[in-house]
Amino acid sequence: MEKLSLSCLDERAPTDRAVPSVPHDGVRIRVCYAGLCYLPQLTNATPLRKGCTGYRNGNLFEGFEISGIVESIGTGARQSDLTVGDPVAVFPHEDVICQGYADYLVVRELKNVVKLPASISLAVGAMLPTGGTLAMSAVIRCRETLANVVAQKGHCNIVIMGAGCLAHWLIRLLALSNSAIRDRIHIAVASDDWEGLKIARTLGAEEVVLLDENCHEEVLAERLRDSFADGVQMAISLCPDERLQDRAIRCLDKGGFLVVPSGSISGDFQNGKKQDLQVLAAPCGSVEILRTLVRTIADGEGLQKNHPTYKVYPVETSQTVFDDLQLCSRSERAILKFQASHPVVW
Image (cartoon, rainbow, N blue to C red; front, side, top):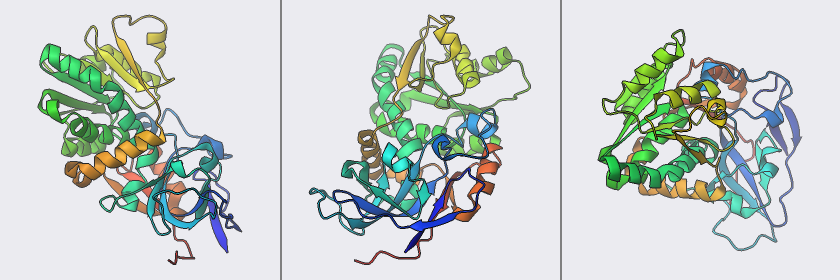
């Protein structure tokens, strides 16, 4: 029995290797779909161009996203809700990431395998472990602050930087996770990716701002501030791009809130230039947040019907699709489909 081993950024031909043994206390997953991410640990060739529009807009981000079917369970696995044949998403723990993209992977800790309900397809499940989980983490991190701002001002105007998958998740999750104040949360999305902005509008963004990268930064900041007549109280930038974060800082009201991933604070803020703002650092994610996201989607009919748009591609085309994502020539989330030659039998 063989498997396909593939690094999405590695220009070498895919290799055949033996299917890994089932861990005594773990599971073996037959991979069905993978969200196309940037994974430095597996890269020996083409580097990511971090200044590219795809990276800046959140169409491409660092991570590892896998969904599939439980193919085998170890004889020593402790009791869990998993059975052979279950559809699952896999949290990207280090021992999972190091295996790379392959037809089969093993998971030694059952807690990192999250069962998907019938309302979540395997293709959608492949968007959850990194991108969806980071967005969910940011929404959880700012939930209390949002409520406080709405209580004080009667509303909260939010600018989301970038118009890729991360922004699309944020639009839907902000509404679903703050249902009691949903009509007082107003969202604008800013990007130089017009196709991504059009998707953001369909998902619920009230305003979209097309940014011209040739304009002076202060001109762009003014355009962002003009998104709302009564100011911008919160800005969210989940792409670790300092230029985007600086733009978010410039557009915020005095005393506003900047939401960014942990460990990616802009140099301007660290240097003390913006002491009148507050940073909300969102953890990159955990398996608990992934489980919360799965429950949120399962319970929210609106998100089941209006999740970020995606398109499925054969895994063999990954390098071409990756190159297109860097240039933002594909606006949908790219999902790779694996074709295992040995179906699960149960």
